[in-house]
Image (cartoon, rainbow, N blue to C red; front, side):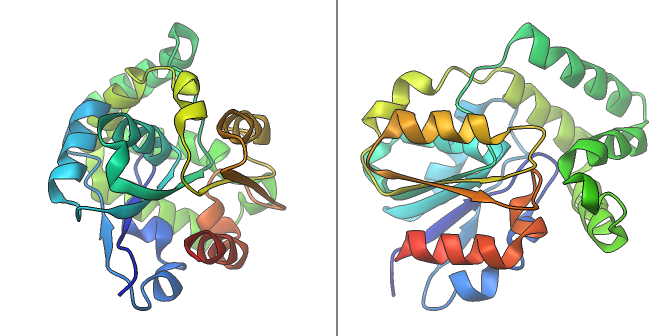
Length: 231
């Protein structure tokens, strides 16, 4: 068996986010999907992950999953053998970025979670995929499985995220930084900043035609990149 792999989904997503990569990644490899919806801080989410993960593992996170991955690196860098940061940012939360999250939390707490998922969809995928009904239904199904309460906890955790940019230069393990070329939430410039901050240990991959959900929008390209990263 090769090194185990821990996957961290994004906001309102679950293992379905990586479903199209799973068969290839799981060949001869143990895979664990982190619980990122039971705690309201990144520190607690990372602590739960580390308590349940193998002693040493490769770590992959998309969007919110990247924020959690940075926290895992801060808490236990010696346990992570390689790192994949997909469609994410190293920048901290700010009052400006938190304001719309507060609005979505208020909607979810009022029982209007359907409205939240509809609003999110408009920015999650490349413009050309907005009419992709099977993809929309999958994203909606994952959000429903996380639920409004889990969504609120996740948003609270994201809103408390620190600045991870000072940590980038200390990352010396093989790192894949991947982003959809049409990602509106964490654009390619965010990925470029991460890769440049890490330096020679990082590989930057920009996937054409993909928005924020690169593993679902460009599944074959994403799988190739992840397999190359895992070696």
